[in-house]
Image 1: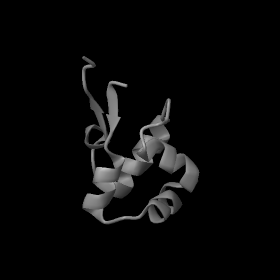
Image 2: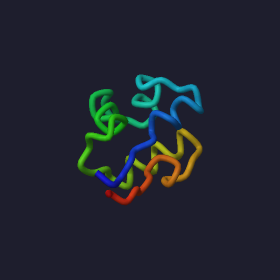
Image 3: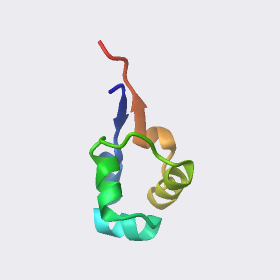
Length: 69
């Protein structure tokens, strides 16, 4: 997949756990874990907005495009 999810990197930089972020954002641990591992097929803008608000970052800090070879 050409979209890389760097949520784990941002979480480590902000020193926040999966459980803590899921509580603050209002989504389940399972769904956040799917997103974190890059297995998600989609993300709602409202979820992305909540994650960015809690991590104090931009969407580009979490999502990255890499051209496939």
